Length: 215
Image (cartoon, rainbow, N blue to C red):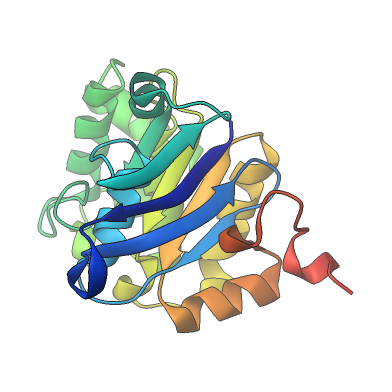
């Protein structure tokens, strides 16, 4: 699944909440979108996932404008305000809720099986705010992929929970290798490190190779 923004913006001129952005993301390797300011990462993520529209420009899925398909096949992951777990809820509670969203059994046995599968059972009673950053990223992405029809995930500002990108990028890379489109909306410092690790620059276009392959 391919996602693209063609000069998509919210607002106009110097006061635009999101100035015109052109980017592309697809499967094979995670794609990085560098975004600054407090609210813009959330807004860009929501645009890419079809949760809000652009005032100008276009957002495309598989080279066509299809808002319904965009919403059906994308999932926001840990996006502030709109898709982040409540900090004080236990990991087991978050898993149970996400299993419900995915229309799957969500009882204690199902939660335990999921946590065992992902080697996180020891954190079952730990509040989400205390979960190690690497495990948080991996867990929330895998939970999002349980939802029917999801072919792309958009992870927002993972750097805000601490930890080094080196620690959680590997799990995103593994998901991308499974044919899922992975987009990371993050700040400049984190984006630079992710590009060093082999992520794609989403603003470079569909023909750009992951950065570690660029001569």
